[in-house]
Length: 174
Image 1 (cartoon, rainbow, N blue to C red):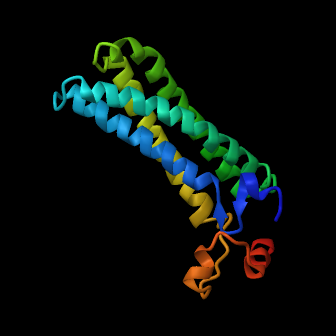
Image 2: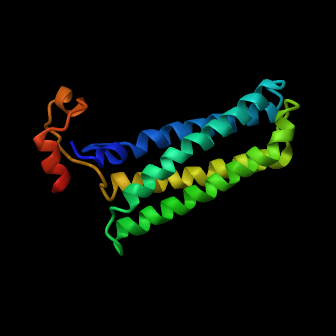
Image 3: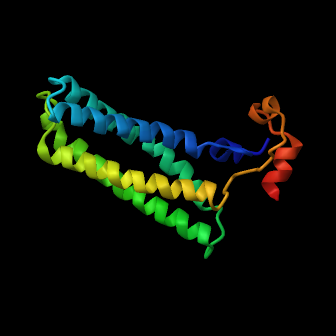
């Protein structure tokens, strides 16, 4: 077993995407909870859920950023993949700035069970920018094929097993 599997994941099972799923899920919930509070669907509960989800998203993003950066370091400089990955990273960093601004500016509102105007705007902008970043992340995998093994005839149980097979190691090196 390679030491790099601890931060890159196993061949065909990278660590970065599941961490981004948790981050994106938290920020998506935060946006929905803020909207529910702002339009009056909830009374205080939306604000509490919004702020807690933002904080959880920020915590989860630390792992997303670290594993994404370590994957980014492995990409050949000057390639279209590197340019796409760099743009993805910059866009996601921009989204994070808006979410952190919402956390900071929104804390005083959260303590009163409210979502303030500026924190709501920061949250919505963060969500929009994050959506663009996710689109670019999809291009990294589904267009450029980063970390994709293409073992289409691999038996299902073998493909899903948390054990590195010789076929996976060979496909990763190809």
